[in-house]
Length: 106
Length: 126
Image (tube, rainbow over all chains, first blue to last red; front, side, top):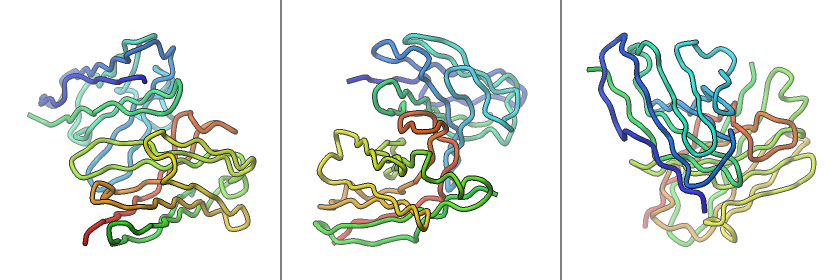
C-alpha cells in the first residue's frame, strides 16, 4: 500500500512569509497529487490538482510542484486567512490523504 | 450555484447502521449528476481526512477503500440527484464528520475532488 508523509506536521509563520510544505509518497505516483485546505467547521477546499495546476478561483500565492515521490506546496506570502490545515492527497491507485500540516500565524 | 447538501447529524448505537444523504443541486451540475463520481470522505475527531469510497451514478460503478469493504454501501438515485452512504456495524471509532464530494473529471472516481458537502456529524455512543 502507498503511504503518504507530510512535513512539517505544524508550522507558525508571520504574515508575508513564504511557507513550504513537503509531501512524500512511498512509491511513484506520477503527478497524481492534489492539495487541499481545510478550516475548522468547513468543508475541505481543493487548491492544487495534478501537482501544479491551480484550481479556478484560488489565489496565485498558492503553488505546487514535484513528481514521482516528492512534492512541494508553497504559499508565497502567507495571509491571515490562510490559517488552516493543508493535506496532500494522491490518487494513483485509491485516494489517500497525507496526515496534514497545520499552519498558524506567528 | 453548485451545491452538495447533506442530511443532518445522527446519533447511533454501537452495532447499528447509519445512512447519510447528499443532494446535488444548482447550475449545470444538477443536469450532469450522473456523469461525475461522488465520493465519501470522513474526519474523526483530531484525525485527518480518510476516503471511504465512491460511485459513478451513470454506470453504478463503485470503488471502496479496503478498510471499509463489507461495511459501507454507496448508492445514488439519479431521479432525485441524491447520493447515499450507508455504514453498518458502527463502533465508537466511526464517530466522525462525513463529507460527500464530487470528482472533477467525467467518469472518474479517483480524481481530484472539487465540490464538497457541508459535512454530517455521526456520533456512535451507547
